[in-house]
Image (cartoon, rainbow, N blue to C red; front, side):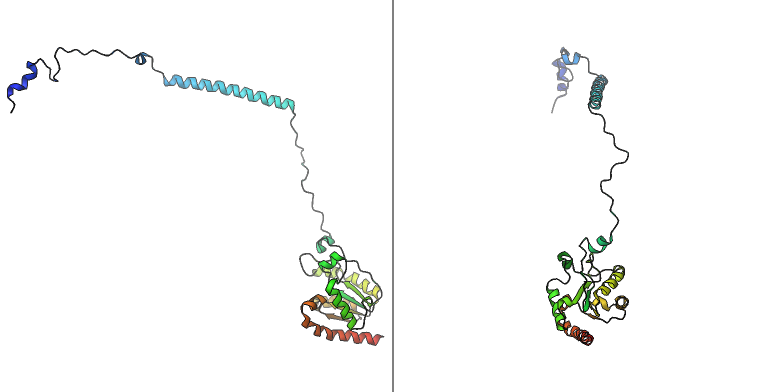
Length: 255
């Protein structure tokens, strides 16, 4: 154990409470050069920066103004007309030809005195492009039908009720068909046909039956499937032949 006399040992050695020499002196260090310099004021820096920005902005504004003035002097501003020209021409009024034929040519038909008049509802697109009604295999089959009833191709006036191919549909609309009635009456009169043979299922419809009666009046008329359909459905030929025999008998009596 420590003796009580050791508690005052630092006093006997001339030391202070922190074991420092009682005669020691504190010498302060010389102030640093950086510390002696005046501190930089943040407000002064902000003011200088703002002034520089204002100076730069003023210079840029003056340069931009001068450039605009030079451009306006070198090239006058283009005036926009009050009424700008239309980029797309107005669509012309829809014509009858464009409405029904999609600009396909109208079928030209030569009328001459004939024994019968053969009528399809309208030419096919291929017929319109070739300028010939009943072209290709359809025409060949029709000539064979005429031969079966004792007629040569030139003894039949082949025509179409509507002389242009329809647009986007297989058949013309009812209004267009009705509008062609007067022309068909003139055509029938000019052909001097004794009977009319209609080709196509459309002629079995009630509306067409009424128009056919107006067209033919007292003239006999017959309806058979279109040759194009007979080519695709040969089983219909027997039914068509039964009707064709009636037409053949009529023509034989008239001789």
